[in-house]
Length: 263
Ligand SMILES: Nc1ncnc2c1ncn2[C@@H]1O[C@H](COP(=O)(O)OP(=O)(O)OP(=O)(O)O)[C@@H](O)[C@H]1O
Image (cartoon, rainbow, N blue to C red; front, side):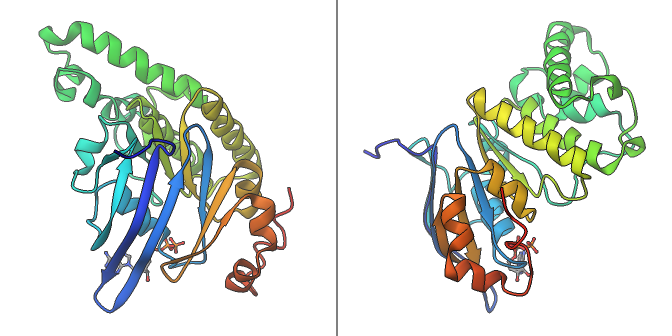
């Protein structure tokens, strides 16, 4: 039996797209209740790794384990009730719908009534409508957008839309949240707020894995960082170790990101 010390284990995962080895024998362990960063230059394989973890693509080799149980044959919709939620690099919201409706969509896995029945106020669904609405509002309150609940998503700023995605992931009541470039397009105030929210979630017992290009944010917030380059894991450890790692410096050489990553 597998000893459960890591909430998530990626073991020897490889994925090839035609002639391109997007992931090459990646092994990563994520400890519960930590913030774990995945960094690497463009095209390193970070999003592919998230897609493999969340069942969007099947690995060619290797295994994925959530709390010791193998999950790599599961589909995305089967992983959500097991406690895995994610956001996407490119915002995936229904822009013509309201903020609360978008968050409610993350909620349906926990209500026995179909979400569209809840949304059109079907008679049988009154109790679950109330529960789902309360929980969706809690998620919005957490990210500070409760006053925007009835706004159409398209009227929100880009940074606020990222927070709606974040709230939608939270509404699925995950144990493990994967955030793909959550700070992209955010201004410094929004980034500071995001950092505060991620720390709060960690205190509440969530585990967070994030892909992020903002090195200052990553170095400030993550206990452990795994670095990918050309599909391989080239380094892993605490921020102070990663910042000085010669292979990491060389992978980022000329890009300037690590130079400005002081805590
Ligand atoms: N579905 C796909 N089919 C073919 N090639 C793909 C596919 N998805 C990703 N790739 C390729 O795999 C490599 C890794 O891509 P991936 O998006 O995982 O990198 P990344 O580290 O997330 O990059 P970025 O920081 O630019 O988002 C890239 O060369 C990309 O073009």
